[in-house]
Length: 340
Image 1: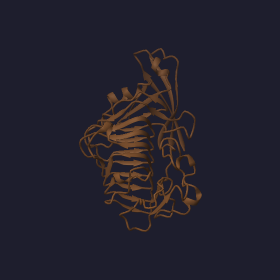
Image 2: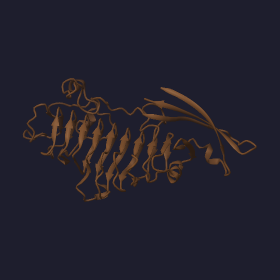
Image 3: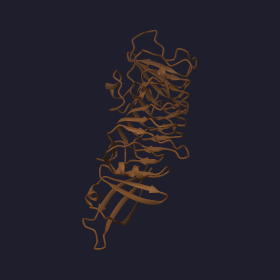
Image 4: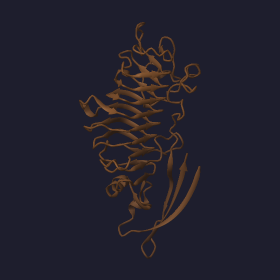
């Protein structure tokens, strides 16, 4: 982990009360850095951002706004696991409305407590990494190509507010993530080392590797999908229930709650909820059911094991002088830590 410090002088013609707030957003436009303070820092940074810019948020809770530009948006962390009060939170519903496809949207290390909705035009090659999302949805009336979701925790993946479009997520990658509930179809998707809860029948034309699929016994994996070294776990007591009824690949396994409790936290072996638990497998399961690469199935196996440890630069300290100098300049010392 590397640290670097830099001191900058800024000229302010307005009252500097906002500069005393620990909440801050930095906007990087072609190497030119601009700073915004207060809970509205993200709102103000987004107003002047241009496609291709980078916005970095400190820890704390920010007022949300539409992601209207194809930018890189980075927070401090999605949770407090690696330090107290380190997470970056957006509590408002957030809409991705950017339409520019010559730049890619990247979102990292942010906790979206409510909706994150793709509601604008057709985005291309968007990446969401190490984020917590209460409900991730897609209400745009066009396909979203090249979306990658990596090391994320999503409670609900669904059509936004009852949108009737049946296949809203297509041609994307879901890597070492956890999806609590599927309320919409996903189509032509590569799923690797994930933990997914309920309604596997919504996964159509998907290729699923080394994953754990939890179901209450109400549906089976759609016949158009293929699965390799996946563990199906159900709370159903039916002796005839099959998670993989249409697949002949013998490398997939199925267990019932009556046969084994697969999760270390027993509260979730019969009550699936993505938002609060680790979903770590018990030793007997993680050592027995292995993926094609020889590591445990599910979100903690594979080449990118699930972790909430933040990636990218992180603003760890911002010291602002109480008074400006006689010529109207204000001294600001910022500490930034590079992570991973």
